[in-house]
Length: 118
Image (cartoon, rainbow, N blue to C red; front, side):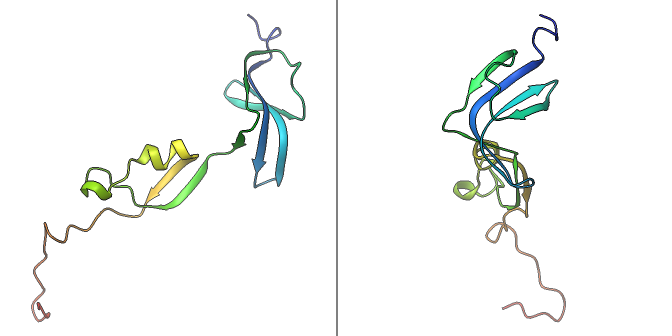
């Protein structure tokens, strides 16, 4: 298979494309070549591609960024979250963890001299 025969590696058809940067929101087909978006058109059903995926009824959007997450899995027992479950599987490609758990019962700092310790 040469590139002339299949100019696109992948064509996603029938999905609702939402792009908050350009304001695009509607039914489009999207073609990928070499790991990059190569075409975005209302109809690429006849475009030669190595693989096709029908996304009718699905939303296609750029990965979202969660700028305030608290995941810390395995640190706080039942309160920790799996980063993949709250991230990739829900459309988030980047999580910024805002800090781990406070270990109130496991670690106590001594007060500085002159501080109230009660």
